[in-house]
Every structure is written in C-alpha cells, then in structure tokens.
Image 1 (cartoon, one colour):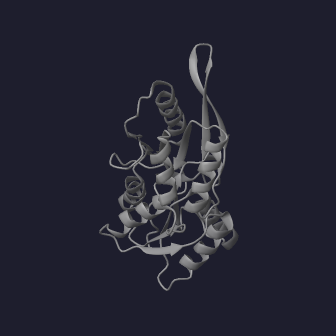
Image 2 (cartoon, rainbow, N blue to C red):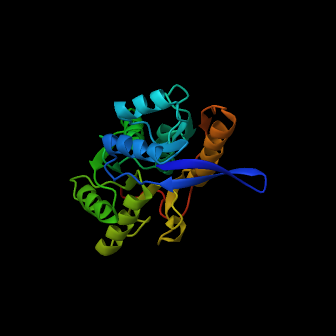
Length: 256
C-alpha cells in the first residue's frame, strides 16, 4: 500500500509514494494502522489492494476524506473507487481453456481464502461452474505449489490438468512434474493466473491468464493524482484480461 504525495514534473502531474507491503496473510487491522501512519506523515492519498478492509480503515477514510483507490478488484458499488479486473472471469477463462481442450478431470490449486477476497472470488466462480473440480488449498510459494501438486496427483483418480490460481503455484507444479518425471503437457496440463514476467520463460512456457497489473498501476496512479490535485473522484475502471496460450497445456492423453 503506498501513501502518495502529488508533485509536478515538466508540467505533468506525478506522485511521490512511500510503500508499505502488507504481510501475505493480508491482516486488515495492520493495514488500518499503517494507513494511519502514512496519513500522520503527510500522505494525501492511498492505493490499497482488494476489498477486505477493517472497520477502522473505513472510519479513517470517512473522517479525513482521504482519497483512496482499491486495486486488483472491480466493483462499481464498493465504498472506494476500484481499478482492476474481473477475478471471477479470470478463473473461468482458465477453466474454459482447459475444457475446450477436452479436460474433464481438473484439480484447482489456490491460496488462502480468509483474507484474500480475490482468491475467494476466483474459487467461488469455479465452485459455481458446471464442472466437477477438486480443490487443493495451499500457500503462495513455489514449495507450496509443489506440495499441492503431489497431493493432487496422489488422488485415486489422477487429474489430467492443474488449474493454478497463481503463477507462483503453477511454477511449483511444473517443478514437481519435472522432479517426478511427468511430462507437461503430454501427460498433464498446467495453467496459471497472473502472467508474471518470468512465466513465458519457464519450461515449458506457462499458459496463463494475463492480469494487467502494470497498466492497473498506471491507471490507479493517474486516478489518485487526479483526485488529490483536482478533487475529482475517479470512476471504477474495469481492465481487460487475456488468455496467454503457451506450451504447458494441450489435449488430455488419449487413455485418460
């Protein structure tokens, strides 16, 4: 979460930011305290991620009228302006890619749900689909992805595809398959969600759903700068996602 101080460079508005990154668990109370701390040292705007907020955070925004924009999330009805993408659509795009290839036995690897609203939305969308999916909750590291892959492949009925709700978990899945001698995508397809900079350079190159985080940062920064400088509250903005079909997915093996 950055606290932002508007400035000007060659006649164009820019913002100076001091960043605080929340812990992986996404503790809303810690976020609220850090927001107060940024305000105390002169921040004139905040960029936050997702929609899980402590009541103290909303009370701070209401009391101070501090401009704040939520990212990685799109909801025109949310208390703060949002700049982000449709998390449900991202999960369903990955699922549709696998089912279009012919996969029916699909395991889903996902992170914690309690404090990550984006993951919760993706999982809910998949749960509400018409497909019989098996879900494996895990952490957000490569090692966690490897462990969840081992669990998925140890099931009595082995999946033909792994749908990972983060590229980090998908990287772990690819590493575990390499270690176990499982050929991707010939024996098992793997798809991620994020499109991290290194995902195209994995072996095999990771098929994933591109989330426009770079563009989101620029749009959100422009939105908060305009709000602070011109007192112009931004509208919610929905950014496009895209399937990046690469080498880690293919039709299921014929014997599946």
